[in-house]
Image 1 (cartoon, rainbow, N blue to C red):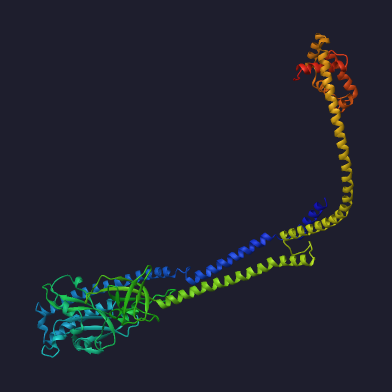
Image 2 (image 1 turned 180 degrees about the vertical axis):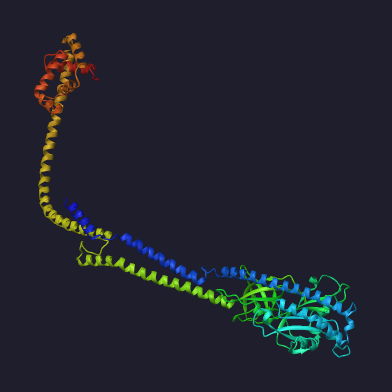
Length: 582
């Protein structure tokens, strides 16, 4: 009962102070350790770049930009080819009318006719220049002013109009200069001569001229040829020329014509596109297998991105984008081939490039952010784990110190339910130990007393054993007397057998079978030699009850006395009747 009261008191104190369960804090501590491991894994994966999808994102950005650049460049080149074909047809008609069906060779050594023809061609050439997306237009006649001149073989008369001081792609607002042609045409306009003006073209500097003047048939669209990047004679400007033959209906070549795209014009027409990974530059350049020749192409606006214009790039294809390698630079991008013809047979391609260095810088910056966040998270989790560890262990250490110093208090404010219960259990065991110790000391003092009593008991037991041995001897004597009496009764029964009335004996046998269980028990005790008092004690009945059963037994057996009943019983036992065996 006292222990129950103590248990109730401890439970009441626990409820009063709302002691925190150790398993709750332990669970929180384990969670913090899991978070530490998770943050460490997060840090490692951040360093390895597992969370970065920059390559896939860059591939998507480049794909969108490349599609736009390819569409713009393809439409631009198709438009220039269409304008050049229209210029060729118009020039052919004008020249045919001027020659009055005569061959173009009649213009050789004929300055007056050449001047007349150029004046007729100027309006068409000027209109084509201003209506096309280019910065120059030209017509070369297959004739020269002086066939006896030393350079007559490579000198041809014609017109070449160019824009100067380009600042935008709106060609209508640009100033036009007279780069090639008879100066009288420019004075009549009036039109300023280019500072590198010459009277005639040096056809050795025109890549497509020799090829196109040998053309005598075919569609003009199939004979549009683009040159690779070349230096405009007498200037610092790089450009690409589109050339188309001027072919009459009889297959005679009057010359060639075409349009010009300079590096400056291409840069203004194709500004760089900004992205989160840096600026993307549009390039038009020949490609041969996996080699992109920048030195033979045009490069759009770069906005600070460095591209070596005289290098060639080796293309290595990837999952999301291609890698373009030069001697000292790496670029990332995509390219698509354009269905146009070039003078050297190479295929032109529209290319979108971005600096690999800029991309790596952005990726590293993003990775550093991930690493920093993971590191901060890891540090916070470690500090949190240390805090929880101290908070978790501190109460336990306090309780252990209290136990060692014997100052433990059940009513402590900072405690755990499990620790309180454990220490309460230990304190209870300590009290029980003290009680047990006291009880043992008491028991030891009583043990000496009990030892003395034990000695006395042993002596009494020895006396009792002697008395028991004496009683055993007396019992054996009584047993022998009983056996002798039984034998005597048997002899007497045998001798009296012939003196007993058979009818009375038969009535006795029948009466034995009619005895009740209790009467039979009493009957058997009489036969075993028990007296009245012994039978009363064994059966547990009173004397009056025994007398009642005796009367019933005598009546059923047909006897008048115990002696007669024992005589009949001895005879019955001897003959094996009435349930007895011989």
